[in-house]
Length: 151
Image 1 (tube, rainbow, N blue to C red):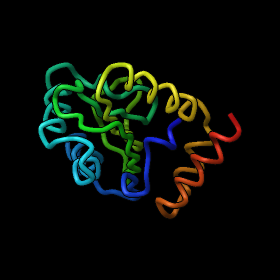
Image 2 (image 1 turned 90 degrees about the horizontal axis):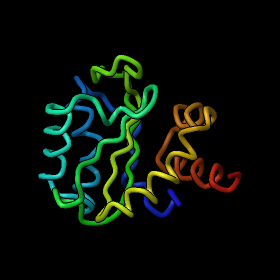
Image 3 (image 1 turned 180 degrees about the vertical axis):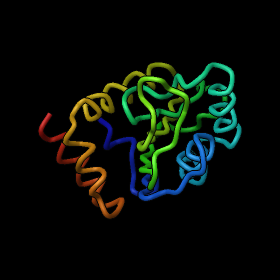
């Protein structure tokens, strides 16, 4: 479940980002600080977007920053960052991005399990309404537990 991979220390609200790269780096910093990923993992996320385009923008207003596990994923984790102002990633269909969910998984199976639980929440418009209204990381954790309980 998503609640097993997210903790209050990985949640940031009302974050200012000057552009997509700044948003990615700021969203992933709590994962670095918590020892979930290495700084090189974050660099690889940015490199991937620069080389491949905005493939991490997975749906309208949502990015899932991630890199290959061998690039520095240390522990499974998902962060949540809500930007104060959305940023452009260059995704024709899904820009601008306001919500970033940086992901760390030690193997591809871990990615799949984390993604499945995240996708269930991302498919519910109420999740974003309530996420945007949250005032603290504790509120966001309560939201995740509430939404998981109703799935």
